[in-house]
Length: 203
Image (tube, rainbow, N blue to C red; front, side, top):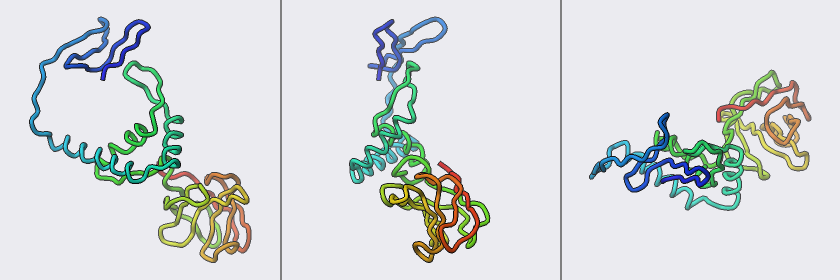
Protein backbone atom coordinates (compact mmCIF):
# COMPACT_ATOMS: atom_id res chain seq x y z
CA UNK A 1 0.00 0.00 0.00
CA UNK A 2 1.31 3.44 -0.91
CA UNK A 3 1.05 6.28 1.59
CA UNK A 4 0.68 9.76 0.12
CA UNK A 5 1.23 12.92 2.15
CA UNK A 6 0.00 15.91 0.20
CA UNK A 7 1.94 18.60 2.08
CA UNK A 8 5.28 18.12 0.37
CA UNK A 9 4.21 14.91 -1.44
CA UNK A 10 5.89 12.17 0.53
CA UNK A 11 5.44 8.62 -0.71
CA UNK A 12 6.33 5.33 0.96
CA UNK A 13 5.39 1.80 0.04
CA UNK A 14 4.57 -0.21 -3.07
CA UNK A 15 1.90 0.25 -5.71
CA UNK A 16 1.55 -1.70 -8.94
CA UNK A 17 5.07 -3.08 -8.74
CA UNK A 18 6.61 0.34 -8.14
CA UNK A 19 8.42 0.92 -4.86
CA UNK A 20 8.56 4.42 -3.41
CA UNK A 21 11.38 5.08 -0.94
CA UNK A 22 13.55 7.87 0.38
CA UNK A 23 17.29 7.83 1.05
CA UNK A 24 20.05 10.44 1.30
CA UNK A 25 19.58 11.37 -2.34
CA UNK A 26 15.89 12.05 -1.97
CA UNK A 27 12.63 10.36 -2.95
CA UNK A 28 12.78 7.50 -5.47
CA UNK A 29 10.28 5.40 -7.39
CA UNK A 30 11.74 2.08 -8.52
CA UNK A 31 9.96 -0.51 -10.67
CA UNK A 32 11.26 -3.97 -9.79
CA UNK A 33 10.71 -7.00 -12.00
CA UNK A 34 7.79 -9.05 -10.73
CA UNK A 35 8.61 -12.44 -9.26
CA UNK A 36 6.13 -15.22 -9.87
CA UNK A 37 5.65 -17.40 -6.79
CA UNK A 38 3.37 -20.27 -7.70
CA UNK A 39 3.47 -22.07 -4.36
CA UNK A 40 3.87 -20.37 -0.98
CA UNK A 41 6.91 -21.20 1.09
CA UNK A 42 6.52 -23.11 4.34
CA UNK A 43 6.98 -19.88 6.29
CA UNK A 44 4.32 -18.13 4.20
CA UNK A 45 1.88 -21.00 4.70
CA UNK A 46 2.43 -20.97 8.46
CA UNK A 47 1.84 -17.23 8.67
CA UNK A 48 -1.29 -17.45 6.52
CA UNK A 49 -2.67 -20.18 8.77
CA UNK A 50 -1.95 -18.00 11.80
CA UNK A 51 -3.77 -15.10 10.17
CA UNK A 52 -6.82 -17.29 9.47
CA UNK A 53 -6.76 -18.58 13.05
CA UNK A 54 -6.88 -15.03 14.39
CA UNK A 55 -9.63 -14.01 11.95
CA UNK A 56 -11.73 -17.02 12.98
CA UNK A 57 -11.23 -16.09 16.62
CA UNK A 58 -12.43 -12.55 15.92
CA UNK A 59 -15.56 -13.83 14.16
CA UNK A 60 -16.47 -16.08 17.10
CA UNK A 61 -15.61 -13.86 20.06
CA UNK A 62 -16.13 -10.23 19.06
CA UNK A 63 -18.53 -8.23 21.21
CA UNK A 64 -18.66 -4.66 22.49
CA UNK A 65 -16.41 -5.43 25.46
CA UNK A 66 -13.84 -7.12 23.21
CA UNK A 67 -13.77 -4.12 20.85
CA UNK A 68 -13.60 -1.59 23.71
CA UNK A 69 -10.66 -3.34 25.38
CA UNK A 70 -8.61 -3.58 22.19
CA UNK A 71 -9.43 -0.03 21.08
CA UNK A 72 -8.32 1.20 24.51
CA UNK A 73 -5.12 -0.78 24.13
CA UNK A 74 -4.54 0.70 20.67
CA UNK A 75 -5.09 4.22 22.01
CA UNK A 76 -2.54 3.61 24.76
CA UNK A 77 0.02 2.12 22.36
CA UNK A 78 0.39 4.44 19.33
CA UNK A 79 2.70 3.29 16.56
CA UNK A 80 4.50 4.77 13.56
CA UNK A 81 3.56 4.48 9.90
CA UNK A 82 6.09 4.37 7.04
CA UNK A 83 6.29 8.16 7.00
CA UNK A 84 7.30 8.24 10.64
CA UNK A 85 3.98 9.70 11.75
CA UNK A 86 2.35 8.61 14.99
CA UNK A 87 -0.94 6.80 14.38
CA UNK A 88 -3.56 4.94 16.42
CA UNK A 89 -4.47 1.52 15.08
CA UNK A 90 -8.04 0.26 14.91
CA UNK A 91 -9.02 -2.38 17.47
CA UNK A 92 -8.89 -4.99 14.68
CA UNK A 93 -5.36 -4.07 13.59
CA UNK A 94 -4.19 -3.89 17.21
CA UNK A 95 -5.54 -7.38 17.96
CA UNK A 96 -4.03 -8.77 14.77
CA UNK A 97 -0.58 -7.25 15.24
CA UNK A 98 -0.51 -8.22 18.94
CA UNK A 99 -1.21 -11.90 18.16
CA UNK A 100 0.18 -12.62 14.70
CA UNK A 101 3.81 -13.37 15.58
CA UNK A 102 2.87 -15.41 18.64
CA UNK A 103 0.30 -17.53 16.80
CA UNK A 104 2.72 -18.00 13.90
CA UNK A 105 5.21 -19.37 16.45
CA UNK A 106 2.64 -21.90 17.64
CA UNK A 107 1.27 -20.08 20.69
CA UNK A 108 -2.41 -19.54 21.44
CA UNK A 109 -4.44 -16.41 20.80
CA UNK A 110 -4.26 -13.83 23.59
CA UNK A 111 -7.90 -12.78 24.04
CA UNK A 112 -7.20 -9.49 25.78
CA UNK A 113 -4.14 -7.26 25.96
CA UNK A 114 -2.15 -6.44 29.04
CA UNK A 115 -0.87 -8.33 32.03
CA UNK A 116 -1.81 -12.03 32.02
CA UNK A 117 0.05 -13.01 35.19
CA UNK A 118 0.83 -11.59 38.62
CA UNK A 119 3.28 -12.65 41.32
CA UNK A 120 2.44 -12.62 45.01
CA UNK A 121 5.49 -12.27 47.26
CA UNK A 122 6.10 -11.66 50.96
CA UNK A 123 5.54 -13.74 54.09
CA UNK A 124 1.77 -14.01 54.55
CA UNK A 125 0.08 -16.61 56.67
CA UNK A 126 -1.32 -18.81 55.33
CA UNK A 127 1.01 -18.90 52.33
CA UNK A 128 -0.61 -17.55 49.15
CA UNK A 129 2.62 -16.65 47.34
CA UNK A 130 3.43 -17.63 43.76
CA UNK A 131 2.16 -16.96 40.26
CA UNK A 132 -1.47 -16.07 39.57
CA UNK A 133 -2.61 -16.70 36.00
CA UNK A 134 -5.41 -14.98 34.10
CA UNK A 135 -8.54 -17.18 34.01
CA UNK A 136 -11.32 -14.79 33.00
CA UNK A 137 -13.29 -11.83 34.31
CA UNK A 138 -15.16 -11.13 37.54
CA UNK A 139 -17.20 -7.98 38.16
CA UNK A 140 -15.85 -6.50 34.93
CA UNK A 141 -12.18 -6.89 35.94
CA UNK A 142 -9.56 -9.57 35.13
CA UNK A 143 -9.58 -12.53 37.50
CA UNK A 144 -6.40 -14.44 38.39
CA UNK A 145 -5.89 -17.82 40.08
CA UNK A 146 -2.98 -19.67 41.68
CA UNK A 147 -2.39 -22.79 39.53
CA UNK A 148 -1.93 -25.21 42.43
CA UNK A 149 -4.23 -23.81 45.12
CA UNK A 150 -7.68 -22.25 45.29
CA UNK A 151 -6.39 -18.76 46.00
CA UNK A 152 -7.72 -16.13 43.63
CA UNK A 153 -6.94 -12.51 42.95
CA UNK A 154 -10.14 -10.69 42.04
CA UNK A 155 -11.96 -7.38 42.10
CA UNK A 156 -14.63 -6.42 44.65
CA UNK A 157 -16.79 -3.53 43.36
CA UNK A 158 -18.33 -2.74 46.76
CA UNK A 159 -14.86 -1.83 48.08
CA UNK A 160 -13.39 -0.80 44.69
CA UNK A 161 -10.26 -2.82 45.44
CA UNK A 162 -8.62 -6.12 44.56
CA UNK A 163 -8.59 -8.93 47.12
CA UNK A 164 -6.64 -12.16 47.63
CA UNK A 165 -9.30 -14.67 48.64
CA UNK A 166 -8.27 -17.92 50.32
CA UNK A 167 -9.70 -21.41 50.26
CA UNK A 168 -12.04 -20.77 53.19
CA UNK A 169 -14.18 -18.35 51.25
CA UNK A 170 -15.23 -14.84 52.17
CA UNK A 171 -14.25 -13.42 54.64
CA UNK A 172 -11.90 -16.21 55.84
CA UNK A 173 -8.26 -15.95 54.70
CA UNK A 174 -8.68 -12.63 52.95
CA UNK A 175 -6.26 -9.82 52.12
CA UNK A 176 -7.42 -6.51 50.68
CA UNK A 177 -5.53 -4.39 48.18
CA UNK A 178 -5.18 -0.60 48.16
CA UNK A 179 -6.45 0.11 44.65
CA UNK A 180 -8.85 -1.20 41.98
CA UNK A 181 -5.81 -2.67 40.19
CA UNK A 182 -3.85 -5.72 41.41
CA UNK A 183 -0.32 -4.33 42.11
CA UNK A 184 0.35 -3.20 45.66
CA UNK A 185 0.77 -4.31 49.26
CA UNK A 186 -2.27 -6.13 50.65
CA UNK A 187 -3.38 -6.02 54.28
CA UNK A 188 -5.20 -8.66 56.38
CA UNK A 189 -8.96 -8.43 56.59
CA UNK A 190 -9.70 -11.35 58.89
CA UNK A 191 -7.99 -14.55 60.05
CA UNK A 192 -4.74 -13.99 58.16
CA UNK A 193 -1.39 -12.36 58.88
CA UNK A 194 1.43 -10.69 57.00
CA UNK A 195 1.31 -8.21 54.15
CA UNK A 196 1.71 -9.96 50.78
CA UNK A 197 2.76 -7.83 47.83
CA UNK A 198 1.28 -8.26 44.35
CA UNK A 199 3.63 -7.36 41.49
CA UNK A 200 3.08 -7.56 37.70
CA UNK A 201 4.31 -10.67 35.93
CA UNK A 202 4.99 -11.21 32.27
CA UNK A 203 3.03 -9.29 29.65
